[in-house]
Amino acid sequence: MLAGIMSAAPSLLQGQCQPIPDSTRAQVSAPQSSSTIKETSGAPEFYDAPKFTVAGVTDPTNLGGHGSGAAQRNTEALAKETVLLKKDSPAGLQPGSLDADTEKSLRASLEHDPGNAALHHSLAEIEEKLSNPLEAAREYQRAAELDPNEPNLFDWGADLLLHHAPQPAMEVFAKGNRIFPRSSRMLIALGVALQAQGANDRALRCLFEASDLNPSDPTPYLFLGKMQNVEIVHSPGYLEKMERFARLQPENALANYYYATTLGKRANDNADAPTSAQSESLLNKAVRLDPRLGAGYLQLGILHASRGDFPKAIASYQKASDLNPELEEPHYRLADAYRRVGEKAKAEHELGLYKELSKKNSEQAERERHEIQQFVFALRDQRPATPAPQAEHQ
Image (cartoon, rainbow, N blue to C red):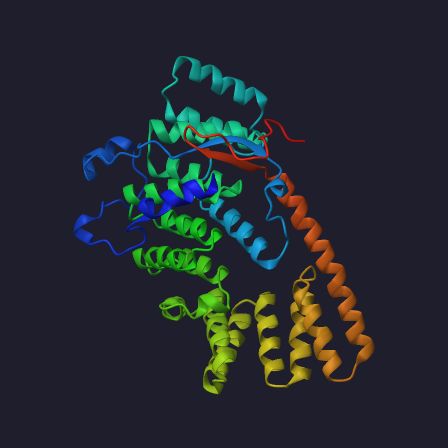
């Protein structure tokens, strides 16, 4: 099943996240109704119909990939960050007012007006809040079928991404990008869906294009920063985007931080002293702008340790730990630094804290993973993959 939908991906994504001449772009700067789409972009059609069907839900650990390693946790965190790009719920549907009575009221309204996309979308949001993800997915899809505007397509894709279904989410976001090429969040979300499948190069192209739509918008750069790893920082164009972020927003602590960490990872490979000094200067600026930026102190500690200055490294690691007491990495780094300066008892104490926090954080990640059920999906007219979907999961 997965192979089938992935085999469709190359044709689906051909040309996605590639430069599009301004003369051919739909001039869409804000969400529009489907009627406006038809007037401005030659009536693009979303359906096709989608090449997948959400067939049920299951515990996410049942389909594998349940490890709580850094890569897995980062992928899940990016999916949650993408969901936060959704627009606010309509008035009267804020959390706290969502209950079974509201659901019944909306369903009654849909009996009289089944073609109302806004009602289907509102019902989808309520079903998600009531922990009925399968019903929510169907309502998000129905809203997008009836009115393929930017919010409806984005919210449908975001729901799929949240429920560990990046391949279907990729299809929705790719088609959304085709209709709304100037929607930054659609490009960001498409990049996140691609990154979740290991397509880092294409994911970066999506985020680069999103950052080019409005270079002063910090959101695409922040997603680029959260995707950062040793492989990605060496990708063509990545350093330039982080440099632009810091140049356009010099008083943004995270802009300085992400540019610094990009430089630092590249300097580590090349033993580049001037670049290392620039990274240190940017990190010091970042923690000055935001004194509670524990990640900045952690990176300063790593930099000091790489130079053999373990007293400074210990001070920075301790500051990072004080600011983020639930973060395990500062304790691991402290254990190593104390060992190197001959403080064996302190090293063993920090290593014990590291193991304790690692276990606690892994268990927490596993609990959160269980709370978000995974969609089981199939190609149209094909059977869903095993294990069999569970209509209800306790």
